[in-house]
Length: 133
Picture 1 (cartoon, rainbow, N blue to C red):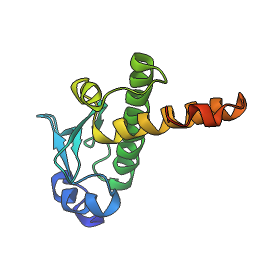
Picture 2 (cartoon, rainbow, N blue to C red):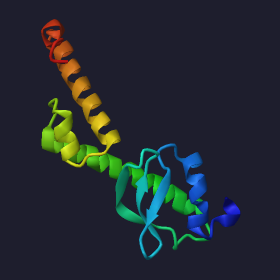
Picture 3 (cartoon, helix red, strand yellow):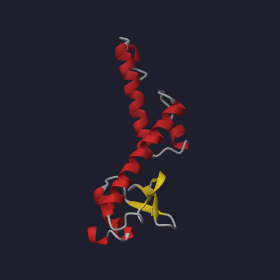
């Protein structure tokens, strides 16, 4: 892989071995990674493109940049979803219609559940809140 690092498209087959969530990247016409695809063909558009051309000879640098951008994108999308729906359970259809990807939807449900369970424990009404959870 390191010997093929000068051509990011030749590194593509190895990305799924490095990142469990990536099956393939999407490049723009400038050779930047603008989105990634999961194994279920779900597309996650990165907030900022990852410029693999700046670090062509250093595949490790643009791979680290890709990892960083994936995390920042996911963090940003979760934050947007929480601002839109707050800590309330929302119908799955509404979340899907909002354009959220599977990983973001799952994270939203986990955060809402944890928030509501924590509040129920703090206020001593876990039994009363059981059916809401």
